[in-house]
Image (tube, rainbow, N blue to C red; front, side):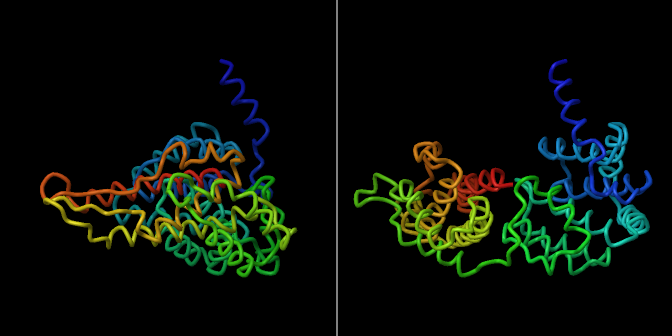
Length: 335
């Protein structure tokens, strides 16, 4: 009962507060809008994770929908199977999404839930661009994708209807009103790259204890940067480095000894850079180096496969999943 009371009290603070309601939408529009966001939650694997369920529940509250409305919307989208059903849903969505303001808010919510952990980020760009084109707001897709990746924003390129509602998407962490600063990001990356990952014996991760110094050096040159801005600016660098590491692992040949093929990850420069970047970003969130993720869960330093029991593809997939844990956690924290 206490948990229920606390949830209801929290819901009262957000009830009817969605920016869409400022446009005085009727119930069919609110229902279609919500169904479209349910679709975004399910497009990867046809499932809705617990974190997404809570997101959708709260979204329903902000849209002044009842819990019954929310359940019915989820049920409706989960039953879409045939191409005919897909076309019918998309046509109905386009019919009610009249007006640029509605479409832009929808795209923002669509991308927001699609950037939650465990979503296929590689497909997000295609989804966002396709929906933006379908709703006749093609230029808004790139703006949102850059905004949610933490690159900041240029007020000139921000759709006017969105400016009053940035706090809805970001709370107190509204990105700075600046164009992406590529030179500053490159400078920060060079500072990190110049710091050793381990000492000469390989026993201590030196970068873990260098994050405050790196930040101090960077902030002297860029005093207008906040930690929030640094995190959002640097997260895409970590994401890109993880993609390079995946490539390197999938291309690794392995040393053959008695039908066992071993790969020493510490010989891959992509592995070193990825761990360095993870440590740095972790250090902008966690002050004590002994509580960094790589201390709690040490990164794998080698993996192997055999010709019979452990297939190469399976071994590589497993080690990539182990290394992906750090990035997923950072994405979740920064989100």
